[in-house]
Amino acid sequence: MRVQTFICLFLPTLAFAGKWYKGNTHVHTVLCGHADSTPEVVAQWYHDRGYNFLVLSEHNKFIDPSTVKLSGEVRDDFLLVPGEEITGKVHFTAMNISRLVPWQFKDRNRTRIMQNYVTETEKAGGTNILNHPLSGRFIQAHEVSPVKRLYMFELYNAHPTAKNFKGAHHPSTEQLWDALLDKGMTMWGVSCDDAHKLKKWGEKENNPGRGWVMVNSEELTSDAITKAMLRGDFYSTSGVMLVELVRGTNSIELSVNEDETACELASEFLFGRPVKKGEPGTTIEFIGPEGEVVKTVQGLSAKCEAKGAYLRAKVTHRVKKEDGSLREYYAWTQPVFTDGR
Ligand SMILES: [Zn+2]
Ligand SMILES: [Zn+2]
Image (cartoon, rainbow, N blue to C red; front, side, top):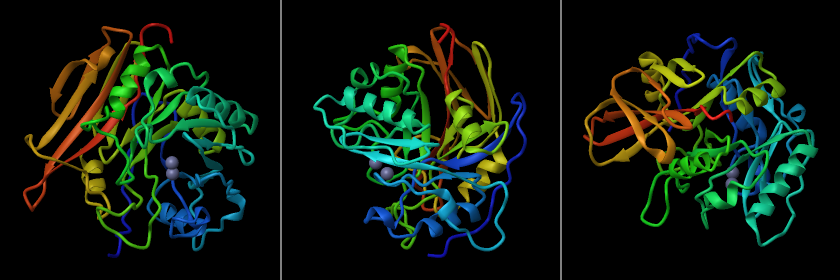
C-alpha cells in the first residue's frame, strides 16, 4: 500500500511562549537486525510527513545524526535528536546523548538497573524515557518509584504487541502512571511509534505514524526539546490534536483542534484502538489521585481545577468507521501538581 504524503498544518496555540513541534522518540532501523529500513530511509519518512524531530533509538547502538543524510529539499525545521534504546532487562530511551550509553549492567533488581541507566545516560549528557513498561514481565510502580531523576515513561507505545490498555493479567499504563504520581513522582507520559517496518503496511504491521508527542519549545534544538519535555511542556497523542492547552498552577484548560484531528485521522497508517461499545464523539476526562475521574465533559473544550495532589487530562475521540467498527484515538496532557512537586 502506498502511503499518503499529506502533512497536517499546526496552528499556533495560546498560553505557551514557544512553538509546537511534532516528534517521535522511538524508532528502529536495519542496524538492530530486525527492522527493515536504513537510518536514512526512516529519517526521510518522518521528515517527509511533517515531523519536526525524531530520535533514532537503536537497540544498544548510537546513530550519530551527522551521518544520516536526507535527500531532496531538506526542511530546516526537522531535527534528529541523538539517541539509543538502552536494551537490557528494562528498555530505556536515552535521548540527547553525545555517545553510546553502556547497557551491560547486570543486576537482579530492576530498580538498580533503571538507576544505573539514568546515571550512565547523564554521563553521556542525556535523559531517559522508560519504554513499554508492560511488555514482558511488567514493571511495577514500586520498582520505578525509588528511581531518582527519571521523569518520563512510555504511556502509549504504538507497536502492535505493546500493552498500553488494561488486560486480563496486567494493568494499563495509565494505572501505572497514576500509581507513580500517587507515590510522589514527577512523571510525564510519552507517546511513540517504536516502529520497525516501513516496507509492508497494514494495521497489524509495526509501522510508524501512530503515536507522537507535541512539544512546546522555544527553539528546535536537541537541548531545547529535551528541556521542554523535562518541564512537561508537551502532550502525547495517538491522533487527537489540541488547539489550546493551559497547564495552570492548579488547573488544566484545553480545546481540541477538530480540523487537525480530522486531518491526522485521515492518515492511511493510523487505525485507532478498536473498541466494542460507546457513542461516537469527543470526551474530555480530568483525572486526579488514584486515577479517579473528577470531571467528564462531552465536547471539544473543558477546564478543571485540581482537588488533590495532581490533575491530568485525557481526550478520547471515538469514531464509527464505514465498516461499522468503533475506533478510539487519544490525547493525554501532562499533570499539574498542587503539592509543590
Ligand atoms: Zn524496547
Ligand atoms: Zn524499541
